[in-house]
Amino acid sequence: MTIKNFFNALVICGTCSVLLACAPGNDQGADENVVLPATKTAKKVPVDKKPALLDHARSRLDIYATFPLTASLDHLSANQKKMIPVLIEASKIMDELFWLQAFGEPQPLLDSISDPQTRNFAAINYGPWDRLDADRPFLAGFSAKPAGARFYPEDMSKAEYEASPLAAHSGLYSLVVRDETGALKAVPYHVAYAPQLKKAADLLSSASELAEDPEFANYLRLRAEALTTDQYQPSDMAWMDMKNNKIDLVIGAIETYEDQLFNYRTSYESYVLIKDLAWSERLSRYASFLPELQRGLPVPEKYKSETPGSDSDLNAYDAIYYAGHSNAGSKTIAINLPNDEEVQLAKGTRRLQLKNAMRAKFDKILVPIAAELIVPEQRKHITFDGFFGNTMFHEVAHGLGIKNTLDGDKVRIALQELASPTEEGKADVLGLYMVTRLFEKGEIPEGEVMDNYVTFLAGIFRSIRFGASSAHGKANMVRFNFFREMGAFNRNAQGQYAVDFDRMQEAMNALSQKLLVLQGDGDYAGTKALIDTMGQVSETLQADLERLSAAGIPVDIVFDQGVQNLKL
Image 1 (cartoon, rainbow, N blue to C red):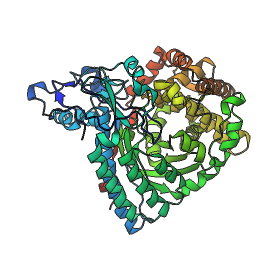
Image 2 (image 1 turned 30 degrees about the vertical axis):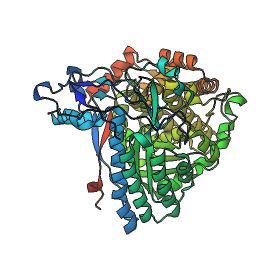
Image 3 (image 1 turned 90 degrees about the vertical axis):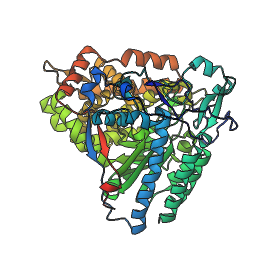
Image 4 (image 1 turned 135 degrees about the vertical axis):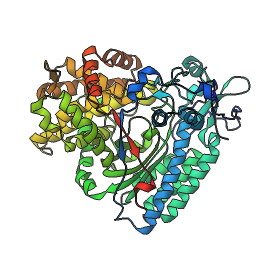
């Protein structure tokens, strides 16, 4: 049975579904016999009630720069080229499912918007809330976005959920609805979205027949099964074992960012990727340093006692299709997966650098930002290699630290909705720590390490513009204010910033220690205090960010994508 949201009087209907978090592959507490609430047939909005664009949003319709997703497919075989449209079709189903999780049925909303630019903005945001403006509504008639999206009933409080039997489980792959008595019940994704998931699984099975790499074929078969059972761990293990495939696919219910109520529930997404063999070869040596870097973290031994898996993988790719959560608002430029802590400890993670998407953000956004906000004498240090390296080390740094608190709980459970911004902040600052340590080991030349530092500062301005609702945006605001207080950079009278290399290192070590200890202690109150005090945009910084908007610098990118771009 599909879950639909009818579009009624321009207000989201009151019955929202909730995703119950669970241990990977173990959807405890879920009741497959629960029947989802009946839904009304979606109807077009009357002409006289079409949603109007709010005044504040008029200047935001062009904050995305369009970028075509293409890649060379000349090195692929005939069967591999036949596989790509099949993978894209499966990805489109993930897009449909994410709409249901984030907003509801999309077509009534999109059909009700007559202006093409406004309709496109709604499509980019997967609903009427501006993802890069703290989820602020941009259409009249809509209230604030529910923190739990459509994973939870809108009338459910955190206290009600925490007092229910469902709170004992982490339920990554289920929705929470009310039964006929009003009690909270969990419905597994594979039940709630059965028709769509069956279709996607069939497509992956068909693609596996075209796969020439046996490890990739095995992954596709196991991932097809995962979609229809919510048992993802076997396919995650198989994904970690892939080494030689030229095509990659990341698909399923993966990240928990959309659940801003608890950060428990996963959203559907997909990436179709082509491996860049030359760049991947350049990156391969860095993964081997992970255990050594873990041992050198600037915290007491108990906060770095876990050993990262030794099978970690680091490669570069060109993306040819994004769908669902990965395509909503700001676009991901690097991937660090799986999220399953058990898989991470057993095998490590794979880090996928999306080179063409990264190049788009560097050329269209980061270079213009640096021209406005970085002192002229340091602009020579704004380089694509520095941007690529910082992004890469950010993803590698997700593997550092610990995944379980000192008390044995999972960090993501202990920190709830604060887990994602804390983890992103940790990865950012430990990425810089890794650059510094590799520089000290002679792995990175002196000139290049300054490129990393100055590009890192410019990157903070880029990510802060994602807004307070973004985990990356919150993490960057905390780091900006923490670094500013420690003198890691200076601002001149012209509103331009310069890195202080030595103080940047001091700030890096101090913030690294603070975040790692907060995670290890599972300190929700301490984490909230840090974000509340350091996660604010000052008047001075806001004025600097407004200069970027006045200069017409895009905030992010939107893709022109599909088989039509691939010459298939």
